[in-house]
Length: 421
Ligand code: REL
Ligand code: ZN
Image 1 (cartoon, protein in one colour):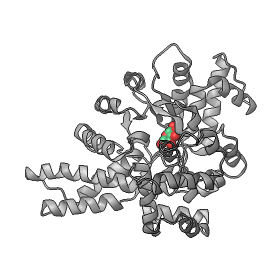
Image 2 (cartoon, helix red, strand yellow; image 1 turned 120 degrees about the vertical axis):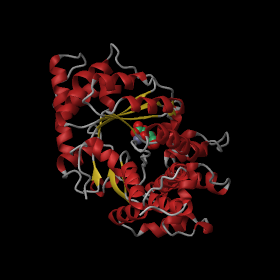
Image 3 (cartoon, protein in one colour; image 1 turned 90 degrees about the vertical axis):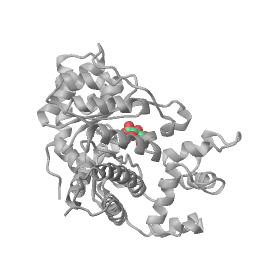
Image 4 (spheres, helix red, strand yellow; image 1 turned 60 degrees about the vertical axis):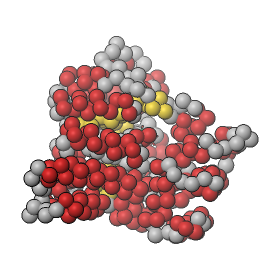
């Protein structure tokens, strides 16, 4: 049934955009199987690294980084709460996000009583909170970031059954192999792989064996890395050899995509630790060369610099083995999500994955998806409106189909896998 008016169409798009179940294809969340690796609750939310760096903008000269890091989590949370919510208004995306979370959890935002919020969540179990947050946010499937070089995580995969929750899937993270090879060699050797710093046949074989074994163990849906902005490909360097001779062959053997998140400059201010990373312009031609060299290999790509976004989107018109995804990190703000979603839809129609959450703390799913859904819905509705004015009106089923493509199916289709029920 065609929709009768522009306002009815907008209402339908808005409603479906806000409520449709989504697949979140990149997060730093875990299922409850992973114990303490799964972060949730008020204090974890407040000490999110996005909020740490924002709070330090208000720190006075006597407040040192060291003093902050020496505090307990609860003290850090109090400090951030005062700086960003009491002494100033929570305007930024991340600060506003915390308020959206409180609101959607049914807490009294107007009380501004942090201890009440803490208490309200204190009696919940991790499993209960996971269910509740997935329900509120309407997130159906969550991709984790899984690193076998993390000893705590490795132990869970090796000796405690790994992931048993079908709402979660693994993505094998390979940053150390690409970006810190000497350290990777030490780790590989300690795990029983006969690797050497020198790129020998044996080393290649052992890296491939390591990757294969972990893809199988985790049932990893893709291989993932985040790359500095100065990533060049092809080059006469370790990264190119690693990609060409180990990673792409292993991805192809297992039929999985390779996700590259490009454009980070790590530790611009080391004193801020995880909060000290920055964005950086990158060269889109590295992605171009990968897509051309490996037409049968699929690449999931996101970039961190605003200046790279348009060119990357144009590149996706040229290569069907390239799927652009998400508005990553500093781009995950209202204005950028709107801008990027607009030109992505204008250049690619609905053949893009418009957003991932990158959550580190479980309840963040609530705000990251709510804020993004609203913008994506508005952009899509404006495109339908233009069609409507030329006499083309979409049906509710078509709207549902288009949103399902954006929020779920483009990801699963690209993987060549059925979306789990
Ligand atoms: O996956 C990554 O490399 C990044 O998303 C993270 O390093 C980053 O800290 C994350 O919290 C950004 O949203
Ligand atoms: Zn991430």
